[in-house]
Length: 247
Image 1 (cartoon, rainbow, N blue to C red):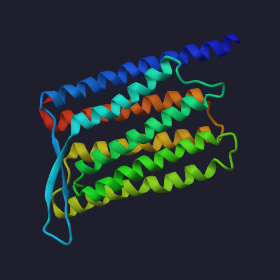
Image 2: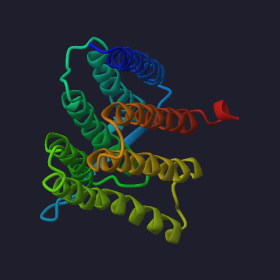
Image 3: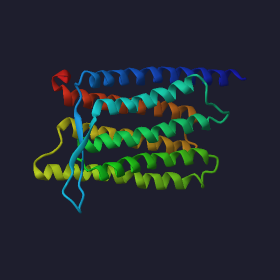
Image 4: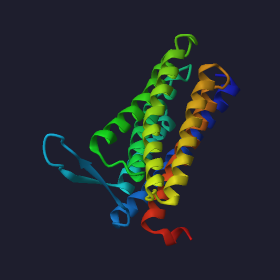
């Protein structure tokens, strides 16, 4: 094994070790909020056209659900740090990160939609499915990365699907503003920041697809963006439950 290859392996292991620890710390902070009942409960409602509205029938603990997003990231980076998944081209580790990204995207969008006023169970399910499914198509892109032409369709189709849940969130924000009952300022600001993080993740995949960046650099960026998403969720949890803690 060449010295340069050895350095890359060491730096990758260090990257994933640090990332796993960082994700776990944020997850613990979110879990502590949930355990102390210092989080907020987001309602899930259901309306049945043929009968009377069922109304709110469940609730989601925001901090607990956000902690799951961070635990997914921690688990993936721990697996990669231990070298349990690897191959010569770096495609298997990238695929694992993309599967985690798909799950995290779906849950994050579900929570962001709830914070922006989406309570209907059907709409929330669609938001989760489109958010996770669109990102999941990047896994197909990773598997076909050797053929740039074939790898083009999963990215393009996935990007089109990814717009749908964010369009729903934007619609609820606009309606809230027009109706004079908008989401809290911290929700509006961090919704935009999370959208930027997601867009950067897709941009990273596009660059890797076109051969403009290496698998290692793409992994570094994904680790940073995943952690940024987790920190944004933590700030939301603290800011909504205990606003004074941010002052």
